[in-house]
Amino acid sequence: MSLAIRVIPCLDVADGRVVKGVNFQNLADAGDPVELASRYAAQGADEITFLDVTATVESRDTTYEVVTATAEQVFVPLTVGGGVRSAEDVARLLGSGADKVGVNSAAIRRPELIGEIADRFGAQVVVLSLDVTRADTTPSGFVVTTHGGRTLTRIDALEWASEAIERGAGELLVNSIDADGTKDGFDLELITAMRAVSSVPVIASGGAGRTDHFAPAIGAGADAVLAASVFHSGLLTIGDVKAAMQAEGIGVRS
Image 1 (tube, rainbow, N blue to C red):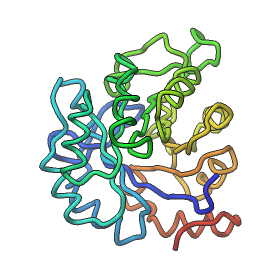
Image 2 (cartoon, rainbow, N blue to C red):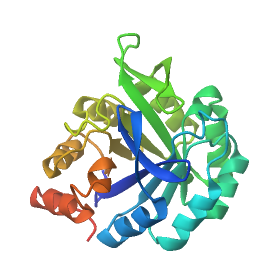
Image 3 (spheres, one colour):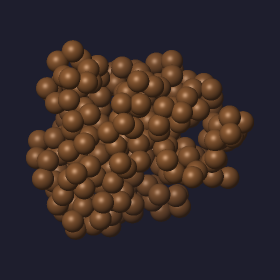
Image 4 (cartoon, rainbow, N blue to C red):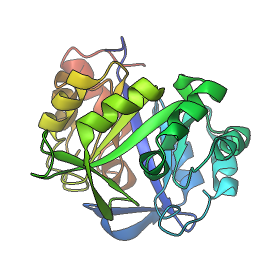
């Protein structure tokens, strides 16, 4: 586990606007990505994650101009995912201002992509994004999905995470579809399972609703916590989350 736990707001973007739904469905407008990114950076966000949630579904590239505009306004690490299909896509995103790049559907379709990116840019650039749901079709009881959670695979989430790390993934972004947007808390069982198989940092995502939801995710093995709707709605601030974790004895960056 890292010495300081990272708090990461997530900007799910579609058609140039931040959106948010529940269980990856019924997406509603949540604001301008550049404006929100600037607000979160000012609040003390350690990183910002930018996911173009319809790029893969629509078979198009990530909206690079939004990435560039965001990177010009915020000076914390920026992870960008959605529509990444090649090392050339990664090169373009890094040139647009991204620090790390998330891969999901394209890596499942062609696992060699992970190694190609890691060999060219370093493992620290590769964030494997796993959109995970529970299923009784895999040994672990967790299965990965593609296309923004729309397509169920038969791939065991833990086995895929282990393979991706061997291929060069430097970080795991573990999104619980079942918990997403519910505000009922992180899927602690999923986080614990991922921690057990991972030799790289684990980012917990999906389900945050209160400040007291974050410390248990760290206790379950997460190195960073990611949330979206609670920040977009103003229900919580980055400072609220960090203060709550500090009160539990968890080290955070000031």
